[in-house]
Length: 615
Image (cartoon, rainbow, N blue to C red; front, side, top):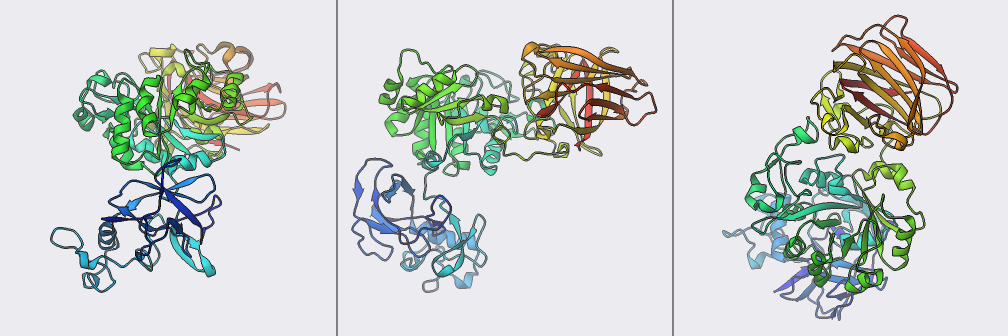
């Protein structure tokens, strides 16, 4: 049987600016690079092409491939990049007409019309549509995923821009660096390594998504990072010792570990699930975490014919062997990028063209040296703008891997108010490393609250001695002068001098009053205690200096209060606006202005914030 290549007619060839390419000719090959030229191909009308295929007046590309060939073929226009072209059985196209477009039964089976389905669910051979003149017709107004396009003669029509014609990984290669990769599906915005996280990364147009896979006892592949499943699921045990049915029944306990307002019935995905969900729609970097996971991942990739959409990543070259043999791109992880027992030239000769390094351990000189040797360097896990700004800007960073790439690269919208009503974490809400994954809770209603709990036996106490803090960097960088308003509630304290804190730090670095020391950013820290005392500190090189205090009325636990922080050119004014004087402290200090980011924190306190606004 001869298969049709070029999908169902919704796919068109465009240039990098999105312009439709008509009358563009090219040859057909068996591989993305190298391979053999295919000449035994026909037009849709059955006319021999001699091996040369030309896009039509709408930029569409289609031909009949060699008999019984179902592999991806590659169309080469001589520009240095080959475009993947997928096979589509004509019988399936006809079924799609019936099942997708929902036409009246009376229209099925008509001459050159939409085919009917036989008792076996297939289209009778005599009713296969004639595709010599056109492709599958669209209903009026197009269908989901279409966009308006302008073809020859300025005719406007519906189509899909280049989907299925340029392979995802080839498209990523063609981009200008650095490319931005959503780590574990953007672990700061959705429960890591879930289908939901991967969907979100694709919907938010990440350049690529990174996921982790673990080979389990029965040979299946979990999408999971840790050696145990305890942290990110409600089942327990060593990841490698579990089985595929465990993943199918195991539910991500998002309500306990990610955000209390997330559903608690998210399934641990299998690798096959992720490929089926977003394969060929976004480049996927597959981090293979244990022995045998590399070969198992490649086997599934080949089974689903997704080899042009993925890259295999691992800490050891043994897990890259199968991918190298299959012609799938590979990346070796090496924290400092120096390599041990291997050289850059040797790595390239072995078939690995990418190197993954830790931004905090690899020097800029090492990154530049690896890039100069011909390796494409991916830097992980960059979650602060300050850390990204410190990376080389000479093009040696091929990709940046981040838990929140939209925030770090500066494409997420700067806000002047909170988004607590969404009941999930927004761009630019990183927590402290010392408190693990804990970033607080949501309480939805009127108003909508976000809060932190660091009272005795609260989550932060297990790692940071009673302090928890989260950046609200979607509000920054703040201008030289501004006013920050918010409602707050102190629900519980461990002792009278425990505090709610508002830190205004220069740069988007984390503030940790427990153990940050000199690593803390410079700025101002405002402490509000249940006794009513408000203290203002200037923090320089990690050392706090008291610059103002006021004793106001005690704060009743569970009562809603309002705080206003005004920063002028020369002063900082902190006011509890909902009570009578004494209710305010004015500090004359102009040490730090501009480029500040707000963070909210608590010390041995449970507190909530709402109606956060910057003016």
